[in-house]
Image (cartoon, rainbow, N blue to C red; front, side, top):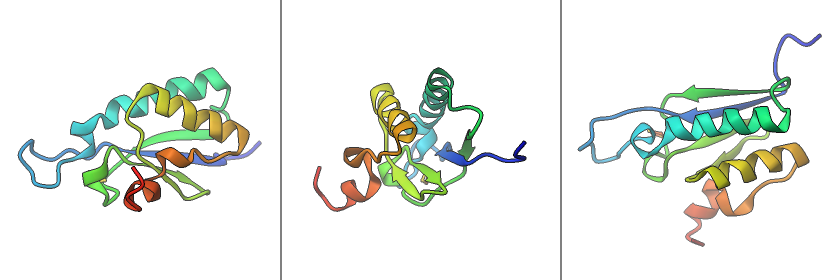
Length: 110
Ligand code: FES
């Protein structure tokens, strides 16, 4: 039996005051995104190997809510339940959801 998980999903839930110039993932839906991840992981049978945790600031606040998945080192910016379901489906199949990558957003292709 393993003592750890193979995959960790960190969802930023950092919260700043409402009028903070950088905003924060907690005010952009981070807590709901984490709940949707947990539900999707359960539904897809991934809970044995995958752990979903809330995290502090991941330094891309303006694009939040931010999610990073290790050990793959994949950065996402999901907004909806459908986005989360697609990411979890990708995890199960070993695929990356290109359209939701933080890199994709930063490259201005959106
Ligand atoms: S508040 Fe979430 S990345 Fe900074």
